[in-house]
Image 1 (tube, rainbow, N blue to C red):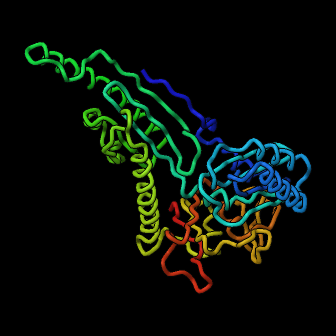
Image 2: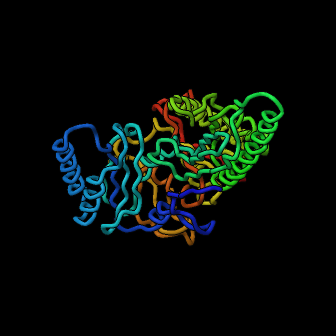
Image 3: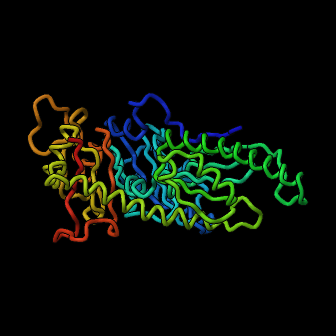
Length: 388
């Protein structure tokens, strides 16, 4: 029997917009906050820090209702150990997006009130936060957890409670012992078949980047034998019985950390190879080429080098036009029938917004994963893998 609870409330029609897409498509008055999460400092120091942040929002022009919503959210905390980062998107006193990430901020604080949200800080964390599945199995069942790297709690959990109608293989010898051995093995096989079914469903529905498998050795063997190839290809096995008393809880964490680093590098290499194939016919490189591809909704993946991001988005020297309808972005004179320009955004913000609104994936590449040969100004130009 499987029991579980989902935390992600974004389910709906396949073409339903996410809260972030809704915000990006709705020009108006948006307050963006990107700051440190709650620290280990005394309560008085935390209150002082929040007061300074509120002053900064007031100077940015955020209305009182937005400031109160932010203050309430920050006082409530996130339950994440320090260091951590917090991203809030607010309009009309209502919070549209509230995400917190384990680990320090990536880049400077952002406190803005503008016609459109600023999303680069959020995307920098999401690039390094793929979904993955942790399966800790034993002979009488398993626990399955759908996690997101740098997240603070499981997105979904499920427990398979199998039959316990079996004796461990420590019986006395003889015919009775052999009979119980065979009976126990059949019960364990049945239990792992249930686990395999739950695992398959989660892989199909959530498409995790990888699956970490830990637990009892025999249970792991039986589970692997009952999984299809598309699941076994994702497996990273941890040789630890994590459901046993006294087990090393860090074994799974270490396996996850290694898999995240290797998996992200592999994904980026694959995207780059696909873009470069055929003489680069599915690649757009540079601002002008990427804008043109975004206007045609041809971008599948957009990669931005973190070294080129402006230190402070409010002080950007170069901007692009953000439109209130398709094609969402312009560089120069507007195309016939294009949407109305509602804001000038920093280049990276404008590109990322148009990519998200046209269904593309955006990756912000930190120095460790960015191209080895940067441009003279310290970063590589925006690059896109095209759909066709």
